[in-house]
Length: 130
Image 1 (cartoon, rainbow, N blue to C red):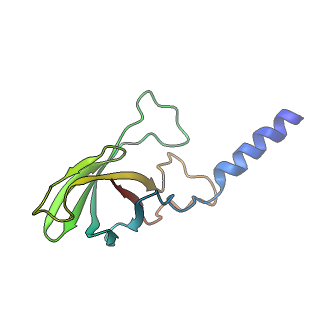
Image 2 (image 1 turned 90 degrees about the vertical axis):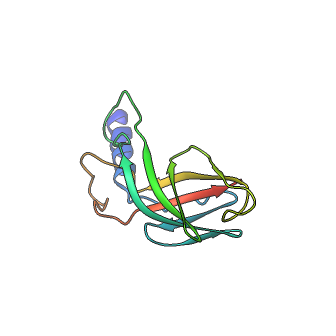
């Protein structure tokens, strides 16, 4: 009986709506198409190029990846991969030197979304600048 209670408790926690993307230190959260400021750098997510992340309710042998095209204002577009820092141009480029990292994305993919998880929820992304 205790095992059944633990199993039901874990299923209920999985069915809870996704929380907001965690805001990283030195970072911001923004929706697809929105604009966020990181110091003197503006970042606008334009399009998800690839989202092959393993669904939460599936066991995978490869975690997959998320690739995102973003605009750095003014006028430069780059491609970011979740968890991989991207070197920013020094001097003349927008925002100066340093790195920009896509650190989180929500909602996470599901093969079969549980009750309470909105399948078409707006995508949100968290970025950090170092």
